[in-house]
Image (cartoon, rainbow, N blue to C red; front, side):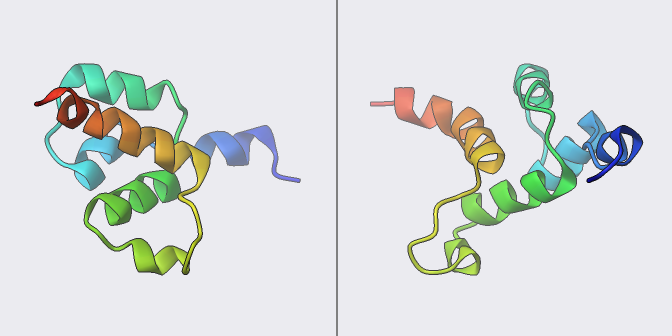
Length: 81
């Protein structure tokens, strides 16, 4: 089992969020940071948003935290007519 220090060291920073996901507004960065994502979560969300869904395997869902990140980033798209 990973120690608390190891788990915290794997958490992504706000800088990581912007580096991986691009220039997104501060409110979304804060919402994503509230999920306590890892760098892997950010990478998975980025791949999904880029349309690289095949890397997860046929029929495999997006992991939960990455899925939440995608939902945050696409929420505005769902509001548009």
